[in-house]
Amino acid sequence: MKRSALAIVALIAAATADITGRLAVIGPVRLTVYQALVAVVAVLTVVAIRTGRIALSRSRLDLPAAAFVATLALSLVMAHDIGLALTAFASMLSSLVLAYLVLYLVDRPEKVPAIVWGVLAVSAIFGVAALLEYFKLFALQPAIVLVGSGVRSRVTFKDPNILGSFLAPAALLGISAVPTLPAARSRLLAIAGITLTLAGIACTQSRGAFLGVAVGAAVLLLLARVPFKRKMLAVAGAVVVGAVLTAALAGNPVFRQRVLDIGSDESAMTRVWMAQSALRAWVDHPMGVGIGDFKVVYPDYADPRVRVSLTESHTMYTTLLVEIGFLGFAAAAFLALRWFGAARSALSADDPRVSALARGTLAAGFALGAQAFTYSLEPSKYLWLVIGLGFAAERLGAGGRHERTDGSERTT
Image: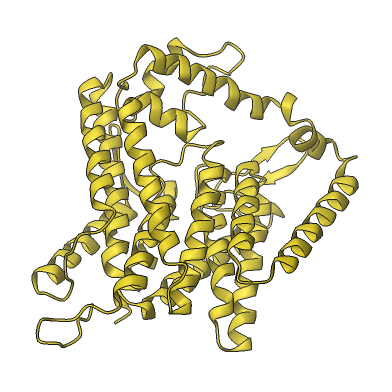
């Protein structure tokens, strides 16, 4: 029964291989372990649908997904480099396929723990790997060193920020689900996994991931079923801890540069300058320049203060606007609103596993949405996992188990 849930976990584990999981590179096309595995799982899912083990039905994902794909296809007409555009188009489609696989394979509340704890187990392993890399004990790739602040852990990923975009939602999903565990030993193991995951985030030194975790934690607190006074005490405690840490680290030159003086930090300001350039490009190309083709047109609008080698946008929202135009951006916003409504509707589900999943999904989604201001996450498999979980939570909360016409249970 839980094999389909484990298949989703396997897909996420394959996605974490990132650049170390490439099987072949053919021009702009990069074939990966994840792509091979998602193709296998998709074929098996189609077989399950044809044999009646999985029932197709309409979902709130269908209309916004169709609109989003339509605008992606339209952007191909505007593409400046059709090779790059087709590759990016295929990547986005594979991400959307993941969301649908999650929607249809996570079809029972019993599968929710396998998803949550499976993803957390993977993230805990990466947390350990990040700690080993940070303390220069073992690394899978050459270290990324930020002058004055040591190693920025990335493990198997191209960039520490991408590692952070995986660890942050994993931690938030785990935090939300801890109260559903019946045994104290299980809770301790879960807390240990969450702690390792958060330690891994710290090792990335990704400000976007830190921001995401803070926003996600705020969402969890807002949605927590506890008295208002306790929420206010938690907020007060967080403020006090933050103030103490800020005072303790104020003398650290790296902390001052990257946090206290963020308005003058080159890395932070680069994102601002690139966003301004992107908006100028969009004004000239309101219908978009083609999915994946930001780097093609950006040099014509680049701010001279940004280094020439940096041609990929670091803000998802401006990337979408430039690449697929205002219609595509509107379709993406429509999808986000539908996802929010779906996940929110499951907050009141009778099954505590489903309601916890809804809270964790909302927290993870807002965390990724916050980090997306500092990094382009539109094709991120972790973002689309969260999207799929939001729609799956709605279905689990509203429909319960699917049954055959003869009354027998469906199994997947």
